[in-house]
Each structure stands twice: as structure tokens, then as C-alpha cells.
Image 1 (cartoon, rainbow, N blue to C red):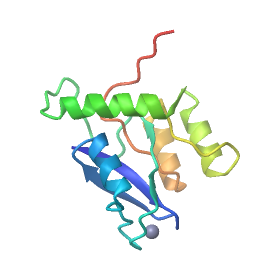
Image 2 (image 1 turned 90 degrees about the vertical axis):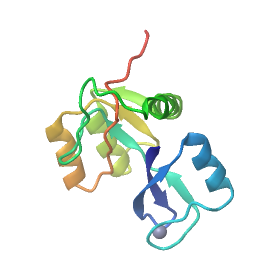
Image 3 (image 1 turned 180 degrees about the horizontal axis):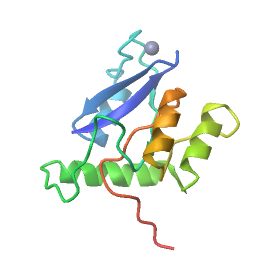
Image 4 (image 1 turned 180 degrees about the vertical axis):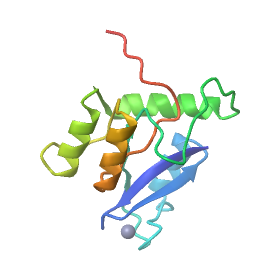
Length: 137
Ligand SMILES: [Zn+2]
């Protein structure tokens, strides 16, 4: 199972679980992914994910989970579909939220304080359920 934060064309944000990324695409294509608030089926992923867990959500280091395969797929999906902005995550997420940067999916690193501050300002961020991204350079 993977969790996506979704946004409808009216701007509502809601979270939904899917068996895997492929299942999400299939359901979305068939118009079965609808806004939890207004029922709009024009939804898209709204995923800006720092590698920290906000209050109430923690990932245990070294935890072995049956969801490992799903997490691997999610990680590949995120890395293929979002820009890695590293330590500029908080600044970039805020710029996107304020309309000062192109709207896109990003992932990167943020401190717990930065993530909290973003959430308090209404910037949608979500923790990645795995460690920081590895990029071969
Ligand atoms: Zn809606």
C-alpha cells in the first residue's frame, strides 16, 4: 500500500491509499479517483516530501516491513517524477506554494522545524517513508 496526497481541480487536498503506483494510475484513468471533499475526479498527486516525519508519524529506522516492495516502487516513482532539491527543500516548497516557482513535485531534505513551519503555513508536505534520497553524481 502507498499513500498519496492528492489535490483536486478545486484545490482540495486529501490523502488516499492505493495498492501500488500502477493501481493509482489505472483507477485515475478510469475516473475512480475522486476528491474526498467535492467528488471531483480531476485529481493529481500533490507530493512535496521532505525526508522527515511530522508530529505523530514516525518511521522506525531498521524496521522490517512487508511493504518494502511498495516503498521501493514509491521511491522509484518519486525519484522519476519529482525534482530532488536537496537542502533547498523548504525554500523551494515555499516558493512553489507562493507561486514564485513552477508548480511541480519536489523532494529533498528538511529539518523537523522546517517541515513544521511549512505545514503551519499551509504548504503541503509529506514525509518519505524511507531514508534520504541517494543520487549518484
Ligand atoms: Zn475537491
